[in-house]
Amino acid sequence: MYKSDLEDNSGSDTNGAIKALAAKPSIWQRFKSHMKKRWWIYVIVFCCTVLVVVLPIVYVGIPHFANDYINNYQFDYEGLAITNPRPTSFHVSQSKKLSMGGGFSGSGHLTAFNASIRVPDTDEEFSVFPVPQINFKNGAKLVIDQDLHLSCVECLSNLAIAAATNKSFAVLVTGDPDLKLGGLPTAHLNIHKTMKMDGFNVTEFMNSQGAFNITSLELLSPRVDGYNFNATIALKNPTPFIVEMGHVTFNLSMGGSSLGYVDLPNLKLEQYNTTAVVLGNVDESMLIQEVVWGDGDSGDVTIDIKGHSCDYNGEEIPYFAAAIKAVSASATVDLLKYAELLI
Ligand SMILES: *[C@@H]1O[C@H](CO)[C@@H](O)[C@H](O)[C@H]1NC(C)=O
Ligand SMILES: *[C@@H]1O[C@H](CO)[C@@H](O)[C@H](O)[C@H]1NC(C)=O
Ligand SMILES: *[C@@H]1O[C@H](CO)[C@@H](O)[C@H](O)[C@H]1NC(C)=O
Ligand SMILES: *[C@@H]1O[C@H](CO)[C@@H](O)[C@H](O)[C@H]1NC(C)=O
Ligand SMILES: *[C@@H]1O[C@H](CO)[C@@H](O)[C@H](O)[C@H]1NC(C)=O
Ligand SMILES: *[C@@H]1O[C@H](CO)[C@@H](O)[C@H](O)[C@H]1NC(C)=O
Ligand SMILES: *[C@@H]1O[C@H](CO)[C@@H](O)[C@H](O)[C@H]1NC(C)=O
Image (cartoon, rainbow, N blue to C red; front, top):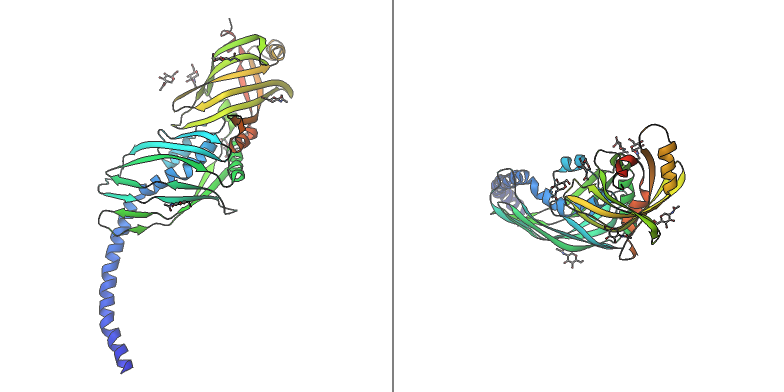
């Protein structure tokens, strides 16, 4: 009896189950094929999470032409701003209309979720980024306006050092938002993505064509607050990224001897053209001696630059400072080119 029930059950239920199985894959496959077309949803997610956290590191100190990086990922950072840095947090904002490629039409949303950002090897979480709900309908509007708190400042500092010393590094992002697309069943996403990035070579940047120009130069004699020059520089910022760094200082030397230091009292990398005031205290006689008695006919001098500090509102910003301190570069500058600014 029991046995025949079982057999019976298996007989009739198998048919049912087969039907169900036949129906299920079709929904599932439909969903999967939708997901394949909706790859850009992942792009949005990663755009608001990892990159928001990691790119400021990459662009720390001196703006970096991360063309390779950006080309590889095709993210859109237009208007993304990192501001008000504090020792254990910073503000992130972006308001952006995203237009979707791939012939997308339809509407839906990605629920708000907490994206966990960690160092892959140690598995140590260093921040949780609250990604807001993203609604889309033939495109999406991304609005981010929040503070990002760091639970492991040292983790971010270590990444920053890697970025500033041309080492590759990675972060792991995890999160589990729900995706609702039109009439399709809600999908529970399980994001587990390792983002690998390369640091950059500061020396190469410093010596690249047009990376920075001195647009005005004023010698302060007598010294003002210990500075003997006040210059304005124009910096290349080929990224659409805005990063407020604050007060950044560098030490300078030439041929192993200390040449002095420069202070950028208020460095903010703007979206297009960045200009910054640079106050400096340098040994002019050493520079002049180098030009007059140095080799060759040009006014070229090679100056070694070593990052010293970064603070904002008088507080050290440890993750920026770590990256700045890791900056060690040499730049060849044609002093004669700038002499005319003084005449
Ligand atoms: C994210 O985490 C915070 C703090 O734990 C919590 O208040 C919030 O509800 C979480 N948000 C989501 C979407 O889970
Ligand atoms: C350092 O930079 C150079 C030139 O940009 C690059 O070829 C090299 O692969 C980089 N090294 C590392 C370890 O990323
Ligand atoms: C950066 O580039 C310069 C010149 O191309 C090279 O000498 C130096 O070793 C590089 N630095 C790193 C850390 O790769
Ligand atoms: C340097 O120049 C800028 C702009 O020209 C000016 O605002 C600033 O007060 C000057 N600083 C000093 C110390 O002279
Ligand atoms: C610096 O000057 C050069 C030549 O005038 C120009 O091509 C370049 O765009 C300038 N760079 C910046 C950052 O303004
Ligand atoms: C490095 O720069 C800081 C401030 O910019 C200055 O106080 C310090 O004396 C400098 N160190 C050297 C060795 O020049
Ligand atoms: C940036 O500077 C360049 C050269 O100085 C200028 O031609 C261009 O219009 C500026 N762009 C913006 C958006 O101000």
